[in-house]
Amino acid sequence: MAEVISIKEKRIRNLVNLYYSKKEVQKAMFEFARNREISPRYFEGFGKRPDTLEYPNDVIAFVKKGATSFHCSEELWKDVLKIETGMNDKQANDLRIGWDLIIDIDSKYIDYSKIMAQEIIRVLNFHGLKNVGVKFSGSKGFHLIVPWKAFPKIVNGVKTSDMFPEWPRIILQYLAEKANPQLVKEISKLSSPNKYIKDYKSSKEVVPDLVLVSPRHLFRLPYSLHEKTSLASVVIDADKVSEFELKDADPMKVEIRDFTPDVKEGEARELLISSLDWMGHKNMGDKKEHKDFKTIKLDNLSDKFFPPCVQKILKGVDDGRKRAVFILINLFRSVGMDRDELEQRIYKWNKKNKVALKEGYIKSQLSWSYKKKPIMPPNCKEFYKGIGVCVEDNFCKFVKNPVNYVVRKSFIAKNQGKKKVGEKKKVSSKK
Image (tube, rainbow, N blue to C red; front, side, top):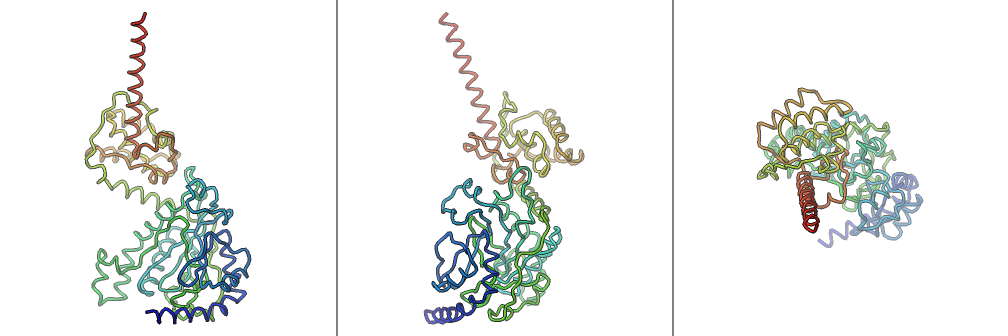
């Protein structure tokens, strides 16, 4: 095994100086690395983080120190060198100016990766993204890019730049959900004798997968070499993925192209909103966590007991109206609000929305809800961030669900009321 590794290392090290000394390669890598954290790989291990490319010839400078490949962040930063390990969300958000959606297709087989790349591109095109950047990963997969320019910068008052990695993860899950059924069909055609692949449920270990992102997630820089294959991570035309062959990634024959496609400002808005709505509906269907929940009847229910997210919803929303009505119905039922009052409040709230939901939809949601036992609304954080209403106060850190918030606030108010009554009686008896 050691001999195989040494042969691979010898091959890549014989290549790196010649390849990375090409001015056009250095320029392409430098241009894409702007505002990105980069990390050179020294065959088996990565260098220090954070690091950056300040000039094109920094590439060859790293190579002279032993670097064999280069990796970069999906996130775009104001000042890369101010990034610190262990930063909290606020610190990261203050430094982050945006993020590209990088779709990292991982597979055992290059032909399967080709099919998935084409299916993902098809879904992106359907959502109005006419141009998608594609590059070979260097091994058996592909990287697709939807650049930061294409995303709306604010959704429901929430800065999109602050929603990394939550929103990219949701988009990737949505894309996989939409692409996988057709993916399995196409792979089955490619490998028709393999019955294992035709079974979608059992094919998960065979079909390509999308690598989910995490904070400071890195991927291979365009035109970087790959240690195991000695191939270059070349950019290819989105409509020619099926024609790609490994020989096209020969480092000595690469043709430089821009990995970042030409997109319009906000072009990915529909994709983002559709993904968030999809996740919202998915969460609505997941009731296992609350199956043993019993309705709580609060005799001192007041709007001031509602968490900030619900109070914001009650003022009317733009995107996420269907998720919002689901939250309100289940919260109101969970705290024992009478049906007549609940329905009046839902209809009154709907009139405050910029675009009201159809009355028929409201009726169907109310009817559907009352045919079943009450369930708690979704837990805090991500679901509410998705419609731009998550505004935490000092009390939110003590609860995980809006129902818990209301119950605790009600309990505190009730005890304070008893305390005041007790104090009055005490004063009165002294007289």
